[in-house]
Image (cartoon, rainbow, N blue to C red; front, side, top):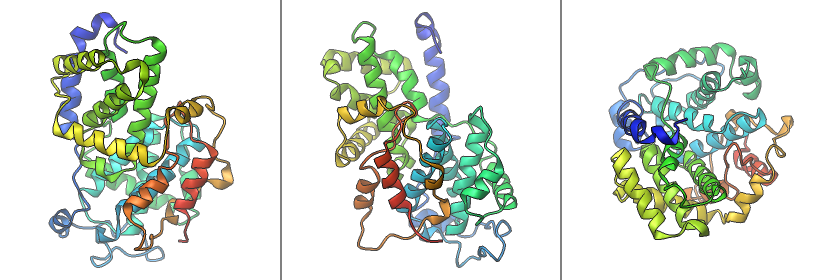
Length: 350
């Protein structure tokens, strides 16, 4: 953590590194678009990972056309359930989704491989970022025996090779922690600063499950979240605070807060936030229930339960249902209502 005395000296260099990483090594592509799938159609598939009892990965069945935004949202919900159950940091889900998105950007996969890759991405993220180790056998159990330890180990190797072992992506929450240092000193009370940070964190977690943000830079998502928080928290609505913050972001990070991408992220986050019917009181209620609402063991569902949604149900409707009680931050645990909502969205047979 940078001390106030070192902010002016160290922040510009830190931002330069993080911005370069998000722009190059850790950038994700729109892998669900037809053009991208056509370009990657010739690439070899991980046909040796799953045996015939689970399903082959022939060219005909490996197309990513069977994977949709809805599937990704469900996997994200499942990942949040797992980290909540084991009391892990919720930022770990953001890391695991970055692994998954970047892996899927390199090759087309079928639905079985998608489920295995999602579970393995979370396994890798937990192994690297959490102090407590989650045994491989736990993930085999979470898959209800649908995948074996050998499947997960093989997929782990495939993912790490595809990512060239670049496994430390700058997350939106990482940018928030550093951007928050640029809010002018003495402009807000510590309590207000805390509320701005928690609401910003809350908003970035909404972005994790939304495929729209896959191609957006984490810095843009973070800035959009903070700007919305500054506009939403009554005590921080002073235009002078917002303008001073934006000027300092440009000074220390070289980023224009009025960029089109930042504005697009703001609009999408605001839409998601409002469609879920969330209020500041609900966010405060989450803070009052820290550690009280973990998912019971029997309620943790399997990633292989992802099933198709009927054609009549639009992506927007699904997003509204998924975020009716959004997955909040590690210090703002999900309520029982959100756990039940996620379970219902995730329900389905193998």
